[in-house]
Length: 148
Image (cartoon, rainbow, N blue to C red; front, top):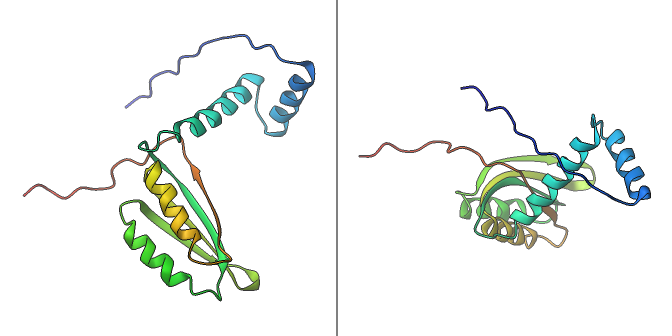
């Protein structure tokens, strides 16, 4: 299936010269071909934040957490993932230096449920740190059982 050709709209933006210079520098530092790409990227990021305000919206993202391995947190996190089996798609765990663990969870679900998942994960340990980062698209259905 061919992708539909992207449609573009042109508009004018006026900003202070200093802000314009900073935008130019950021576009160059990020390897953007032009200002339009940079502005589109910034707008897309802000729209993603705006969409998260609809707590019932389904979004995909990654939940990243780190904690001290000496805390008995790993078992609690396994139990938590089971409680959120519909939302947690996949996980990746890495043992870091100084007895720390890093986990990255691929998640998808209603924004409210994903924030609740993060909140519960952060309560597993006093050393726990974490955040959730949302994507601008969702995963397609992974599979379904045949109707009987």
